[in-house]
Image 1: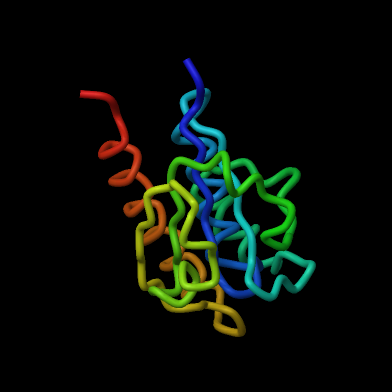
Image 2: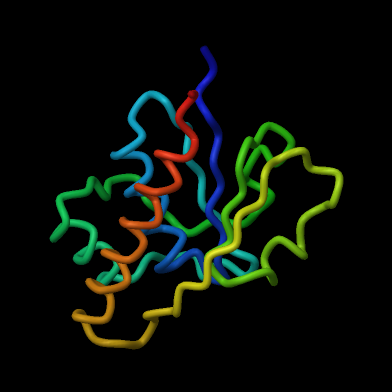
Length: 136
């Protein structure tokens, strides 16, 4: 059985989509192949993102900010925008993937408590996504 392929997109691939990638990878295990990317990637992951993930017990090794062209877009099953509809508007309409829109405020530049709160919110959304993606 092929793993369900999920892409999380935000602007910089610095905070939100990185959080979603790490959380989904851990929670989904072998059932998912997870990617994240940014529309304008910064090339770095903020230390507060890493700290928020580690506080929740998620693995952070190998996380890095990357552009959409590093993702196998045509092989995806699900694309999740963490910035509302803007991110999916950038994608080719011909992609067969299911598109999901989440509106998660960007914690960039905020305090650690805001990053922690954002990570917990994303964790809840990812748990819901994974339960909805289970075969019935």
